[in-house]
Length: 125
Length: 175
Image (cartoon, rainbow over all chains, first blue to last red; front, side, top):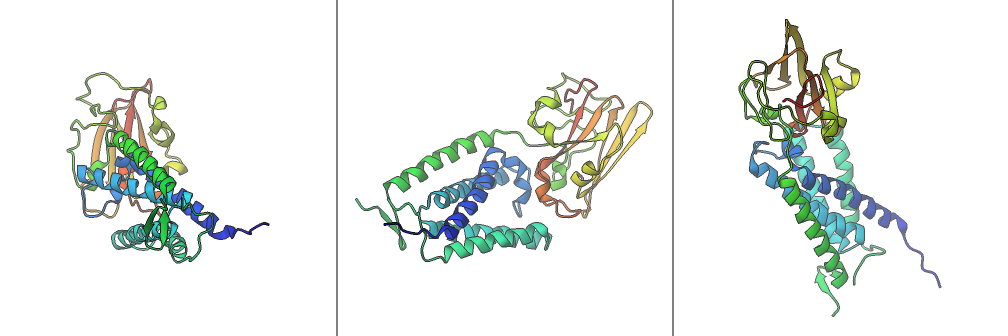
């Protein structure tokens, strides 16, 4: 007997996970290249580097949770918060731009996954 | 053991092991990143101004000699560093369309005066003073833009991935 898997949410979850993994990896690997995004802190400060490292670490964990389907709704909600913070800080500091609008799309994807009732192929063991 | 409940979801042993493994990888990456050099040359764009002509640390921890105060050994070949792929030449030669795109957020002028080249970098949309340097005209000057993804239109969101690199006639980094 075969069970049909709803691939849409799985693909969305994996792709969002890949986005977070890419940014998380790069923020951890070269944090000083990202300090310009830290609001209200000088980009040359050690605090900015630590902020990027913490952000990158969070992204990596959320990415793993999404890719493997570990508590995917919770991971998606964390993703929503992360993306909302990114979009808000970009809009406040720089106004609307193609980058901001693109991030709104990622925020929408995270929100859609967070409100999804069923997450096929989730790792519950 | 059935696993840990997180809201309406369950995280089992396997899930916890995966997350723990990724956390360890993240810590190791972060430890490496903590000591990874950044780009120099335009850090003053973010508020820490270095007087023109002063020694400054570069990405590899070397000093930034300018004409008149060049000292010490030349660094590695730019082509051997990971930044080579992000280097856009400002001098010598004309500034290409790709370089102009990389310079989003900056106004750059390069002028040759005798045996020296005068570089001036102005950060658009700020009242910060321009960054000025003098180099021997045998040097090559490159603008580093590690990611174009932070340059919407003619703006620059993140100055952390922008920098200046100067090489001698052999292509070795001197500042």
